[in-house]
Amino acid sequence: AYLRKMGADTVEVKRMFATSMSAYQERCKVVAAAQIYRHCAICGVKEKIQEIKMVSAQAADELLGIEDVDASFVFYYESDDVVAYSARSMGRINVQIIMEKLGGGGHLTMAGAQTKGITLEEGGRRLKQAIDEYYSDLTDKDEIVNKDAVSMLVALDIIQGKPDGSYAPTENVDRAQMAKMISVIMNQGADNSALYVNSPTGLTDIATNWAKGHINYCY
Image (cartoon, rainbow, N blue to C red):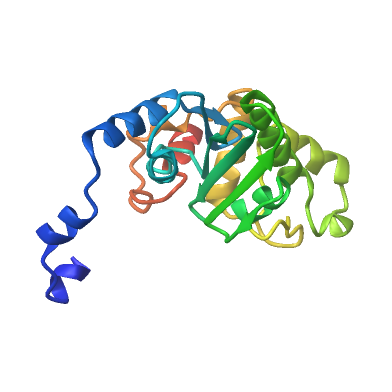
């Protein structure tokens, strides 16, 4: 809509960003093979793909469209002994911090890394370890009164740190956040909010709320 308003030819724009059929098919394979780990979509690409850098970046972008996915990571062999990562985020998880743990960097919502001398399997293990460390390395943990309780809830994936790596223990918890914590706890750590998105509750102000499924479950 913005491009059209500024007078751009949207058909020509689509043509400029078009990809080959083979690249599109490979991207679909990567997206289909992804797994969810702690609100992150992760996929390791074993096959040799001609346009792997572009495919991995596009697949990482597309994976962000999956419900309850806050970040995505696609990793692949850039050469015989180098594993490269393409990371994307919706802003709730700082992928820059995670990629820095793997020797890379970037920005809050877009980052990458390259690690030499490891297998793809080892690359996946290190990525999950970096994600775990991201959740446990709360920058303001000294301000947390009940550290054991917070550590347990983080380990169970019931609560998460903020994008800057802090926990903000003195901030208020709103009703949407509390609804999520209750629903995840009641479902033994599983996020089943998608099953309740369309459940009738009569509430008139949650249609576009990020926690709609959790709120409906609690009702």
